[in-house]
Image 1 (cartoon, rainbow, N blue to C red):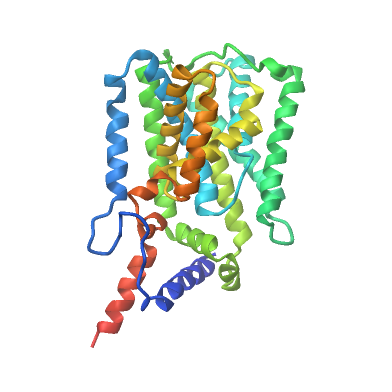
Image 2: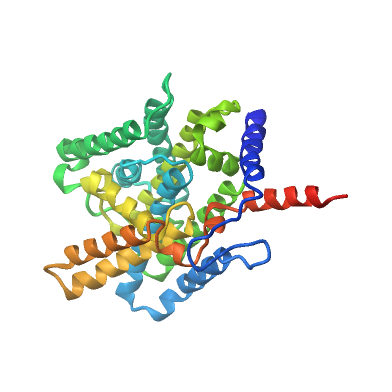
Length: 367
């Protein structure tokens, strides 16, 4: 494994070395060089400050809405890891999200288990297990899986889970599982409001930092090489399908955590949570904000949900059409998402190539 990591690193650095003499052309206003300040930490800081002060200025019902948006942003992070960094188009991400939601709902209904230190790990484990099973089937075959095969496979899994949930009486059928007990910590119950908001925000921050560390680690460098040129990484001895299965499972675990929080926040689960609609919804979040950046997934979720909320309140009959046109315009004219307005290509992809290029220049300038 370590040898494969080293081979992947040499492959990516070799590509940088080959193009060292060519000028770097940046798209957008944020042209990144070694001497310019990094924009990404500034964007992350602004989003964090806004999230921290939101409950202090929002009305109670808007705080409840903001809590739901943060949970969905956590869900969007899981998809951005899978698609934005590994290039796996998963149209079944809601399968892990909804399965965990149903799992913790059954724990609360049948076993009266609502302790936060039990239900959240259980939901994460459910998402991890389901994603391992599906990922093992789709990604770990004798021959490398194509993008279309994985896309249709995840889509089929999500559709099958939706039909199963609607037809299984034990899961409540079409009505789902209503009136889920509140999540607890000792004798304290987490109800809708600032307490639940800051709990979810804290979890999002921790998961975001872990994801940021992951994609900037040696493992993330291998992912970057896999996304840019899978055949070349495989030629250097790296097991590309194993790497895809690992990141697919990690994404499923994060989606399961988000689904657990969503079930307790909303107080019920229903078949749509595992279905195709929610799976497509998370794709739009990441497309709108910008894939392969993590913060783009968060921003996309906030904007799409916020605009949807405002449009549905002011244009009740035609708001889906207006939202669809807005999404289409962004995808057509900013295919890298809204984050591309402030982030250059170099910083959006990562700093590995920039560091390698600096090292090459130092060696060439050395006496």
